[in-house]
Image (tube, rainbow, N blue to C red):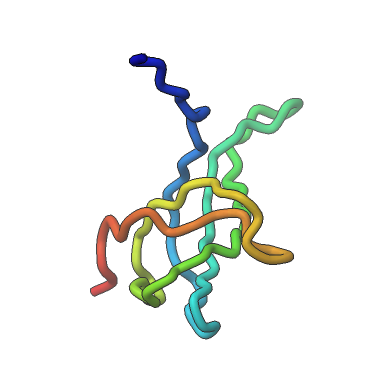
Length: 88
């Protein structure tokens, strides 16, 4: 049979590594731009994600792509997909 069970698409985000002190864990800041509901001013909101980095590949300042995954620890629900751009 050619029946293949396809997984649901996983969320992907891109952001900047702000901490790489922990072993196999990085902290990534994701910024998004929203408009204030009343005044219409454009605001930049950010959120920090704890990300699993198995090979300790990413460093502070790197621009990375992360994907959603199963819970790995208390805070880690994301894993590193790739390093898009290295810090200079």
